[in-house]
Image 1: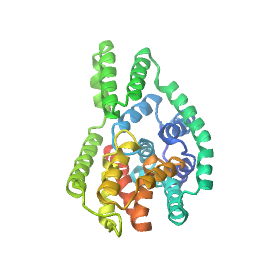
Image 2 (image 1 turned 120 degrees about the vertical axis):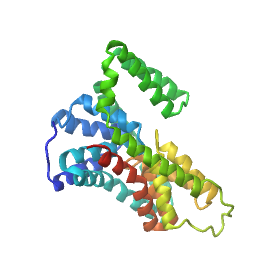
Image 3 (image 1 turned 90 degrees about the vertical axis):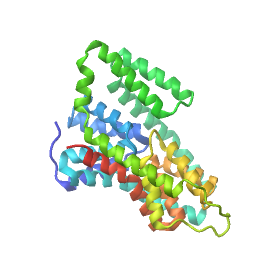
Image 4 (image 1 turned 30 degrees about the horizontal axis):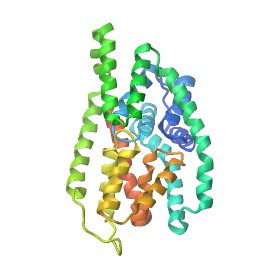
Length: 321
């Protein structure tokens, strides 16, 4: 099982993970699995698989949340906080730097070429991480069958939550045919607290979305007022609390708030921000830092980022005993 560590080593370990976290959640989870599960055996592989399943159903970047969970195991809540900060810090600082350069020079052809050259290496990392995770998870014909069905559904653009829910119910049904006690054991192992915390965050995010961003504001593209710092924080909380499935869910909210309703951001800037976030060792949701920087500079970037990642800290810190 996991070992207890002091706070500084926890922070430095996950800071290193943050610098190596290229390629999105698959590569990031494969990196944690190799060191913490395979080499150091903090928890069992089955336990790790259940963590992935739980946090994929939660809002927020699952690799970051699992990092906070591991930090909590090793050093309590302070350990979880430092693990999460260490994991997100490299991507956040790099996105701040790129946002500043973008406001000065834009996405120049030379800079775009550099990002394009990085993509093959990132893709290779993702494929390798996916292969390693697949080997550790797909251990039966029923799981392979469900994975193939989910892949086909993805090709037809079925929403992630529908795929995830149906896959979970199907697996529970198939397993329950072999052992009627398995389903009840699963619910006993799954913390009720984590579901309640996630539900509270979801409700708060939906209320924020409705009252602050539900109605478009008629504005022109010239001399458009920027949102207040408080509203930027609430926007980040909305993005983090409703980010189910993938970054594309968040993009739809950003498009609605900043482009269609606020008119202080363009479609091209959103695409450029997505390109920048995809090139960094960070969850793709770090694009919200870019959005906040375009709105209010450093202060805006900080507040949007805090709001975005707040659910990803709260759920694992207070959802587990």
